[in-house]
Length: 282
Image 1 (tube, one colour):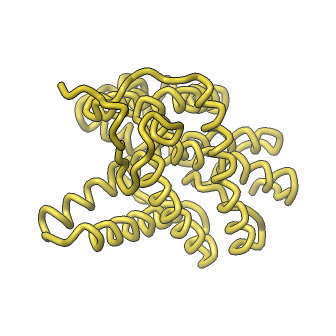
Image 2 (cartoon, rainbow, N blue to C red; image 1 turned 90 degrees about the horizontal axis):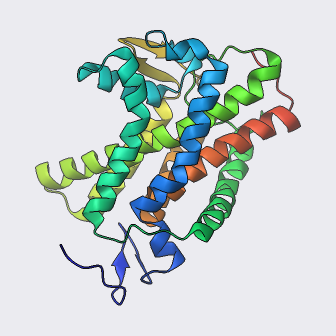
């Protein structure tokens, strides 16, 4: 195994950072793993509090679940997991993938606890451009990126529902549309169609962003098609632009910061929509 050398530059997908700097350390998969464990815990506990029956019943309707989470759960069942085992295995998918990426990266596993506070601040700052963009493109206020169709909850619980599902969407949408989909598209364009790296990157980012936007309005889960959020041009364009933003962020800062920014944006959007714009649940 090659020894990690702190004296040489360490490259991300698009940029190189000073070895063992904050930017280099927090781009490692191990930082994403540790940082996102708290988000995963909040999402799972919150889901249990909002919808306890989902822990004991078969796949819940997407009306009360994060669609990207359901996709992973469906895959687990297709592979042979029971419904209960698939529900447990789905959160572990994130852990296993990040642990595998960390192992193959051959970078140190040690982390600095102080870095996680800075990561939280970075995610907060990086979510602000999306809030501004949403305000410009959507007159009714920020649109959360969580693909959650037709949420049904009492008025007093709507904010909690939006925040919990927004955190889950931040993790699983980035897992599906950035970490997995962009990788597969890059392999297809470069290895099958023999395109150069730059056009492959552009095509992969644009396609993943468009699909990311579409799945908020129309999606397939549990063996059938559903209609999600009502389609408007403003919402579609915003989410496509957000998809490009997250793709660039993923290429520069890695999965942890990207998923964290996505989750933080969703929480802020829910707060702004509820507390400032006072939009009542449908």
